[in-house]
Image (cartoon, rainbow, N blue to C red):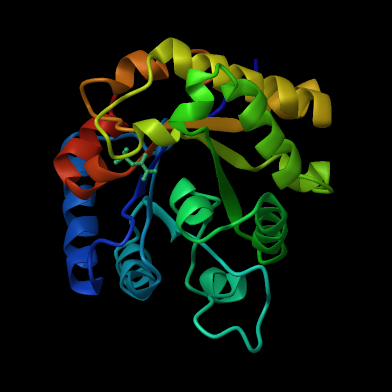
Length: 258
Ligand code: PEP
């Protein structure tokens, strides 16, 4: 098995103005330093609102922090008459490493289709960003037992035509919608079932070697009290953390799950 560096990514959603963001990043960094966190062993990243990114960049680059950061969405276009949209080129200039693509709050709340998300994944790579591609099923799909089929169809559509050279660095986040922000966490077995199936799909679409190297995260009500059991599953390589990432001490504990 390839050694995959775990990634703990905090999704702040629409929380934290740029001043609050500065404090949160500082506190997170201090807490991780106090705990002697080894960033080479477990990567820690925050996905901040667009308006915070310049402040986060100033802090991370100015103080040479080991934290990575990124955005929660990007436009499929490079530039032009797209009022309100943000280009991946702008995110790259702000030093972003990551960009989330296809979070369920965008799929559901903004009607983002797999076709659009496919274009966004390609736009991220075009600008040198690593997409964290989110996928996951709603409760009705899970109740019908169609979660694997549903998620694999999303992955296949969202990665259509993406060359192996790019796909090999993608991060995929499996986030069952019924577990996001609800306090309802999937069991480690639920997480493994779908994350394992995603890895199998990557092997089918690309190669076993590529599949072995791709990081697959679980997201949905992850806390310091449940992260270790989920991380113990062989195909789970990290977590996408919403609510709990707004508390720097809790998020630092999640990052130090071992
Ligand atoms: C998320 O926003 O991606 C998420 C998983 O949220 P929470 O951890 O709050 O469920």
